[in-house]
Length: 224
Image (tube, helix red, strand yellow):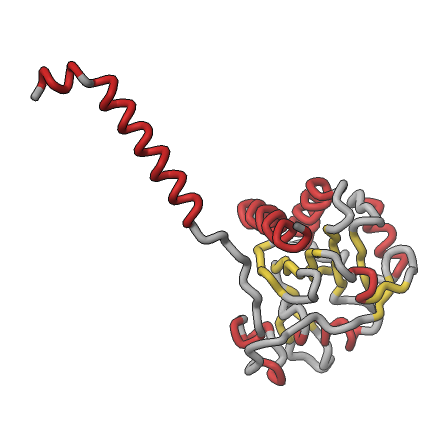
């Protein structure tokens, strides 16, 4: 047996390599392509969802909106028509998780800056403080590209409804103010059909890497 192996070792090694290549090829061909989930309210932490839609299991989409950005321009859902975008909620005077989230959103801005089909969207949860002027100052400090990333302010009830009934990204703050919100660290990935395709920890660099990978995956399935 040993003599046989020595005599035909080149043939055996070649056969093993070819077999490995063939098996790998079959695996890659037959392996199902990963597809991002579509998130519905019933699948999300109930604390983040308005009770009126917690039962909803299909057809959930981001509602239309009309808010104002850091340049005083009116921004509606039409601005994001046909685009993939990442949304979050923050406030400019936050000293805890917001600076980290903004830095990570800036990283996404840098990585996608040349792609007009990928946009960013941040909503303030304290519109009474975050005026257009305040958002403009914040945008300047954080090197935000106006063509890529909108910071939105406006009617507090509308922002609250978007957060709780569309993006499913903030907790209700039990205070005298019925529209008070406790924002989370969540970044929300939205597809061109206004559907939620993923939630990511905006304070976690590994989660941001995953988000960037998922953006590429979503882009390939959308535009190819």
